[in-house]
Amino acid sequence: MSLGYAEFIIILVVFGTLLAILLFLAWYFVNRAKTKDKQFLIEKGININDTNFRSPSQFSWLKVGIVVTGISLALFLLLILEKFASIGSTFGFALILLFAGISMVIANFLGKSNGKGE
Image (cartoon, rainbow, N blue to C red; front, top):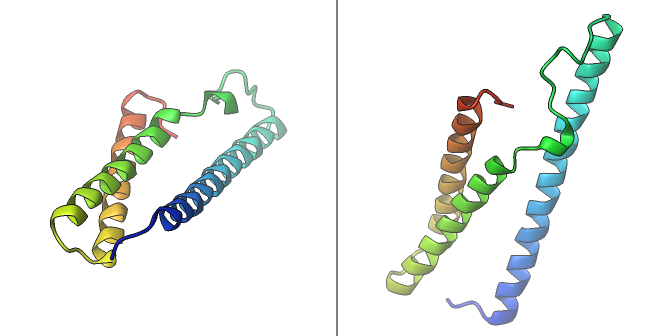
C-alpha cells in the first residue's frame, strides 16, 4: 500500500496540528502550575526572588528537540523499512511510540543532569 502525495500531506498536516496542540497544552499546564506555586509561596510570606523559579521564556527547547528528533528518526527508519520490507501499520505506530518514549527518557535525564530538571 503506497500513499499518494495528497494523502501524505494530509497526514503530515494532521500530525503537525496534533503536535502543536500537545505542545501548547504542555506549556499551558506547566506555566499554570508554576503560577500557583508562586502564589502559594507569596501567601506564606516567602520571598520568591530567593527561590529557583525559571521564567516561562526560559523553556527548555532541548527536551522538545530531543523528542522531535526521536520521532523523526522513527519515521526515517519506517521509510527505509517500507522500501525494503513489507511491514504493517501497527508495527510502524509501535516503532514511533518506542522512539518517542526513548527520546522522552533521554530528555528527562539530560534535564536533570544539569541541575535544571523540570
